[in-house]
Image (tube, rainbow, N blue to C red):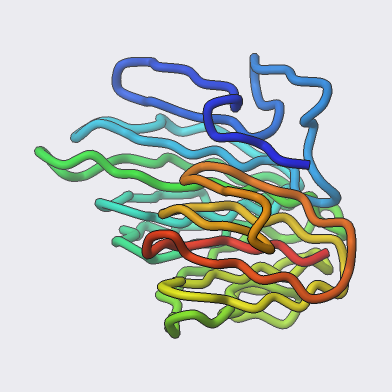
Length: 221
């Protein structure tokens, strides 16, 4: 199953331009309601000096990955922080959390992915984590799992890879690959462009070949 970037839900709110890989908010696509525990992949671009006002979430593991710019965050746990380029945050919404997100720059937009995973434990204590992953070219680097580095309440494992040549993927479970930057070919047959996503249900060895330098997010279920 391939989700092409230009087939995603798209909304231009002026201050926010957003793409929805899966159904989200007022956007409904019965064929794309999520994949396994992966419920939301939103790609957002927020204009300078604006953002999302305070709003609430419950019982969701929310990962934010900044591709360009900066994103300021405040939440009801008392956390106040700013994410920079290539940095990640994890928010356990759990029994209920209120937060806001804001582009603190006066001149530069911020470009980021927001990802929601359904938790396997309900009503946990809300919490927050932040990290700068130590990426190694052409290697999958684990960024979130039950055991961390970002510790999620879900058996899924989340990886990020910066790819410049070939990356050999050994898929032992179902997986979703999201192209965050660049252009790729999967097994020399499936062309994947920036913003595309692909579900893999067949196990075995797969090869991702970079057509340009780029970044992928891989979800292993």
